[in-house]
Length: 176
Image (cartoon, rainbow, N blue to C red; front, top):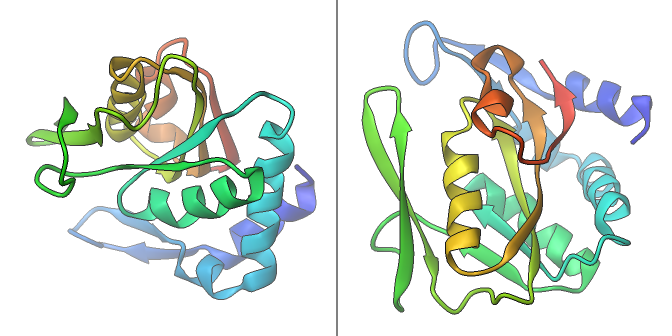
């Protein structure tokens, strides 16, 4: 990835204070989505990283993981695997609970979404505390596949999501 891409990302991302609640500094990626050239360069950076690594599927947690994951899957010519909240997938699923700041949540994946022969990359917009990323990784493994790496457009280092991922491979285009 070029330094230029990181600079362009940082220029496009808008800080929104006190959203969705007081004390939170939200990183708004909407301007990234409005910029076709920047969006294409993000996907190209991910494609270059994974095109020679034997990736057979791309998984993304809802909802913003869908935005980048589907585009990357198309570029790599592999299936996209949606990871969803409870009650959103119509066939039998595996589930994985994870901790939130106040309580727990759960993610699901179709039981037939991947196989033991798959090498999956997880893509999402943001790595914060790592709960969603870790649960996504655990779901892919529960379904029998291998996870190559979890990739993010943005990483918020102060929230220690990388630490929550343990020794699992994590990659981010830009870190705050």
